[in-house]
Image (tube, rainbow, N blue to C red; front, side):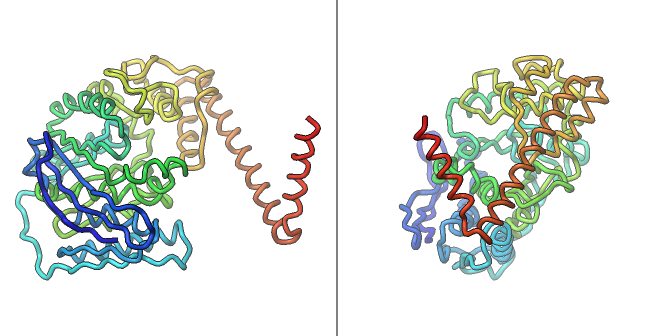
Length: 418
């Protein structure tokens, strides 16, 4: 892969940095990678080669490129960090035979001048994790501290690719940003849109497990002329961390000498974050947890029917806060809603165990019982999957796949009889 023709320009109403990405080994078509922002933040947007390198390194690894060539000087700390991050991704998700991508770029021979004072930002989606990062930051740091958050980065093109939905989210968070003393920086990029459709067909495996952290860090590096530290909110607490695209083992490696990437919220469970936010009226007025952005309407950013909405609503019920917010379609959760809309997956089963106990303490045994039913259903399904894997393993090893073949014959005969 070659990253060429780096430039900064104005494109209509926005300021843009861009580069041409040319694939060398995997046969994908070239494309222009860009990161844009509004004119008021044009001076904050810098033509930093780190942004393009970090944006391209995991796609290059994933699709089998042998190298990334960049004709620019890069920070040696970042180069070593990216090599380490690729090593972790290979260890978690690929085979040992997977070749790491060679970073073909010169390293800087001098250190950047230190900037005083420092300025911190964070990725501000309006969800539980990002609000908890901002809330905890305000509680822990005096406003003039270099790690006191001053900017919230809201990105179009990663989670959301519907312009109208992005407008609704931006409008919702703008007032909140003023109340919390931060500037909301809208950012627009295609660094993931080039892979999103095919990734969606694979359950967003590439984004979730390999690309999420580096994609966010790439955007952060585009603003390293303004920011010295950028926080990424963790979705998981320490006991429940595992191989994941936002694991702090990865994210710390996306830092350079001039920009620190910080993992935040590792000491708090999701329920603890909800408890932290549950008495903040400004948060309760602007909370956005729903991923179904195509359903967004002005003033209505949570469908109240998806798993993530229900999980958050249950947490708010346990905190006694759901009745105090208007961001969901209803003020309470019923047992029937849990039965219909909650589907537990491996990656967040532990959240429901925590929720069950909290609901019991909050005097909602009906919802606790419904959650327990879902946990039991999940455990039963997990046991069946385990048995199926064991049977398949035994079949492959000792019976040369005959069990699978017989099962297919039975299914085919049943179809004929119908």
